Image (cartoon, rainbow, N blue to C red; front, side, top):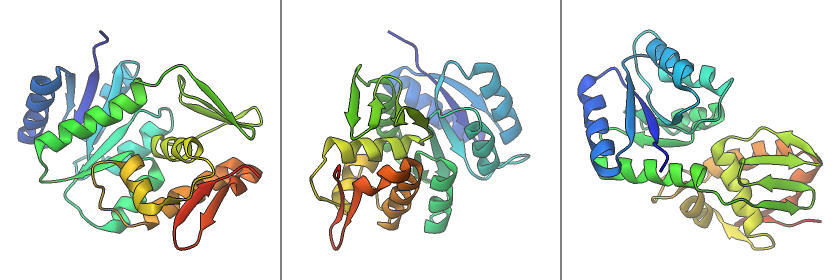
Length: 226
């Protein structure tokens, strides 16, 4: 079985130990640690091929989590969970714009942390070999890539999952609550504007085929090839 390596970045050694102890004890993951943003980038550069997920604190010395996120996203789509004490909606929306895949607010339940880590890893590593073609939008589940009329487009993990969910349920009107429960998982308490923001970006990236994602007034969204 493939060994799963996770990078834990937090300036508090107590927090790194807590996360490491639970992830190792519960799932046997291999944990690499970094105590600040600069060290995180150095560690990731040296281990980018084997790191499958990053747990990244926002407030850190030298480089904060946002800066680390920006630099990693220039070269990698590795799933990133932000650990933050902030609960401001605007901060979360800002993070999703930069490519955050999930948020966990401190203090958090270690069991919930393990569950969310496992869920993201299952989605990113457990895909079957399958290719979907829907109106010229081709999804390669093995490589987690999306092509439009033969040209690959760049989607974040959450954008990819949202688009795939819409296509898997094409011609069905999906409420925002249902989308949140199935794409964000674990009773995500975000505002529906989070979905609207992601839909807007996906439509833009799909170009003319963005019209396939139809807004259902008072309900949510529906994917329909026209």
